[in-house]
Image 1 (cartoon, rainbow, N blue to C red):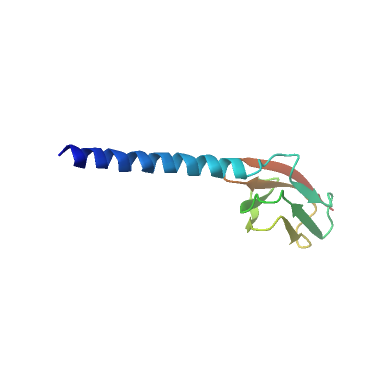
Image 2 (cartoon, rainbow, N blue to C red):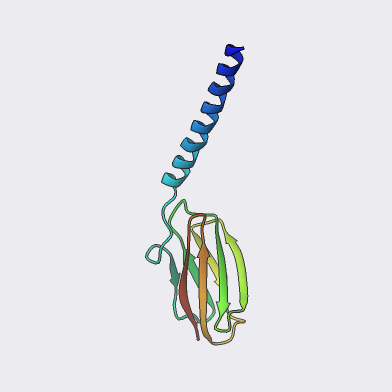
Length: 112
């Protein structure tokens, strides 16, 4: 009976240790998302703008809100550079929010 108990505890220990190691590895390999490392160009925009992310950060969810807080665009970004068409948007100020696995960052975008 001791052998069965010992075997069960050994397997449980390996599972917990494996999960902790996988979590530590995934947290270390992702660059942090912050205001300084995601860029929107050009800003102000007239028709097209590009969102640039650090390499290895994707997938990231992009959400664009108007000044009334209405969601007007939502998309998953799977590349470090993505181009958007804003030609149909009204002139004004928009909020571009990026949501990664660890946090979210919001920047202002002006549409001419």
